[in-house]
Image (cartoon, rainbow, N blue to C red; front, top):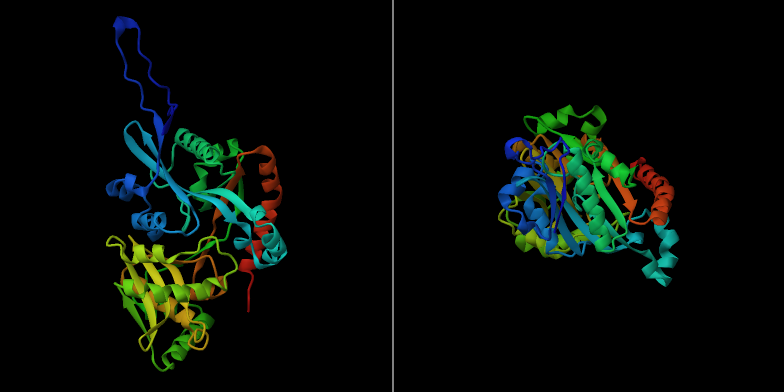
Length: 400
């Protein structure tokens, strides 16, 4: 299915004298594809962000075959004439469980409703961008106003066709929303601040130079945590390129982390992790900690261009604190990224205090939200900004 729009630069018209015909300017069109397999690899690589590992084609392929939240996916491909210029992934969640995505205080308030009337807390929602990573519209930068208007209109038409009332452009950096703002404003979207991402700038010659670059207190803390890990008998950290046989153990450690998480919008399942681990196209490593032959912690790292990401972590809390396992897995990932010549490494939108200590900067991200119906849209605009700002302040507040 596709829709059309004019580039709006004064389309040439057929001229009258002598019956001469002037060729019309190409038009923007949007085609809706149902799987990433409909996008040739060469096209995806040409459009996708060059240094964001969460935008590897293999990540989206693994998402489609797993059960991590969305129950349908689509890709809106924008063309100018015959030339592809942008693509926007969509993730449809017909039964988003609100009690899983709010903070702990709100979860306690919703608990009686969740027990007695679970269907009231199931919300159909359409996520635009990357369900597991930072939002982008891969392609030409900036997106032309006519293309942006057509794209936003098609997003809303998709939501209405599939009965997805709430529409969210998820985790977009402010500048990445700039080209869409006139179109979003015209369709009733409003912008709210989301949880920031965490990014550590690199460019160090080696890990020791990274440590020296830290302020005095974080540097002392880092050396102390490394000493405490090395003092633990039987623990070692290895970097693995092939780790498919460890996936069941990884999932057990991952569940320990998720059981302690404040929010669980995207919970990975074994199918996703296994498909990604076994993908021949994924540039990835597992930073794995073993106690003897037993996996007790890991950080799954992905790479793309000059960028790296510590995508997901798993910890055995039986020894995580005394061995300073969380920090040492991150130190090993940072050393790996430096060795590979990466310019930055990103981590998840959690545990902001220890990530500040690692030297991470906060990368601001926004949601652009609306509802396909007027009354729910007004309610969202009234309630959500305040609720999300409260959740953001709680997440960023020092926990020491």
